[in-house]
Image: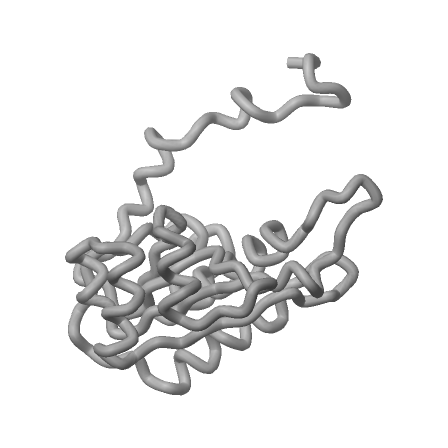
Length: 176
């Protein structure tokens, strides 16, 4: 598969088969995250891999959606504000770094036939408490991982995405 095919195949999976994810595939997904770029190469991240029902229940308390229970693995992507790079105006690049790394993880999962979903609509305080996160560590995303029940619709981009003309500007913002 080439990159654009993988990018178009990835979608937000909300229904997973009960099949376990092979450790070799999980290792590749984690490696894709590990090699992602970060500002000044500070790599301000931590991942919590959750497979047990007990710990999945702790995540479910922060994001109580029934479909989440079908995922065999939950990956909690966390950023470390104490080690992230800050621009001279104070802009913390932790969210950007995590966004890039989680995208690497998701695209690698897609290439392996696995499904994911980017979840950020969760109660961060509950998740932080339930997973015993230190003060400087912020949960950024919950990423379920498993085999999707349905394949992605690669044609959806034709109607559900903006055209290039709607957001690409030449030279300056108002040049369209």
